[in-house]
Image 1 (cartoon, helix red, strand yellow):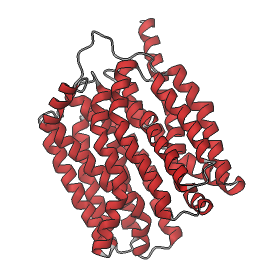
Image 2 (image 1 turned 90 degrees about the vertical axis):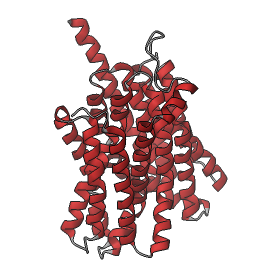
Image 3 (image 1 turned 90 degrees about the horizontal axis):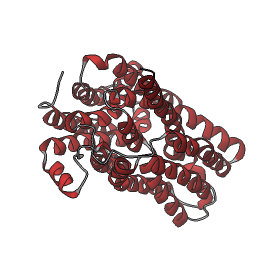
Image 4 (image 1 turned 120 degrees about the vertical axis):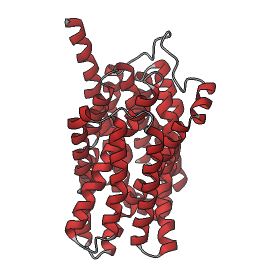
Length: 400
């Protein structure tokens, strides 16, 4: 019994270490760019689209590396991959603080895209799958609760550093935080070995397995569902403030209302944690994906009502908070935990590419439609399609 307790303690120390590193990784590599991009663009003499393009390039690269990183973690453990990712984050953020040209900006952010693929949720979930079996869903939920505070911590921290010391100095501090916290935590606490050699074969271990997955209608429907959901969510992330301003809200009030989304994501994850024993991940996913287009319809017809927008933020934030967990748990529910990293990495590739394409899709709809109500309704339609695809994927496997 003491040995069992010790093993359980070691597993949850992995979650605790990843909880810290996910806050730092998301906060410094993913969220901080929004704070410093205007100042960086002015320094480089680059237009806003050119600067945002570097970030989009990073998201594209993160999608391309997701599958091979997942397979590597399955076979060789997470310690080397995630430690190298955090070391790369420190070095490349330091390089970002020194860029003097647009081409250097793009080169650095292409590298940071690879870093994202090594340190954000997908590899972290694959790390947990190596040490958790029955409690994987619980571990993923706890980890995402911690990760949900990344923007809460790093947006104000980065803004304070950039205001008081300059954007380049702010980014150097973020690099140092990665070096001081993430590198040692990943090196000390993450599993150094992959699955045992005699473990059952994973669904995406080899080319033949991946071909069978792609031929599996459940995999295709699930990939479509997750990709469409991310496409709509990413589009909303860029355009939400402008949508609220179009409804007559001042920039300050629009920012306050939009800021409600983050806490609601955390609230959704807390609710998932509290009621996980009552519903399967598939059932939770169906509910979350149904709520998403409802929230966008509420926004489209809010008509400048503060309370309607608050209702939107509650539904929208909770849905997206829960979907992070659903993307990590439903594939394991259907195909099992063996080879989890390769499986979820393969599924994450189109999802992460959609994250890069979403803002451009939203802008395209706006140009064609001429108003944000149509954008909201079009993205709601994408959300309905996502919900329908998810239902097609999971209903045969749903357990409760």
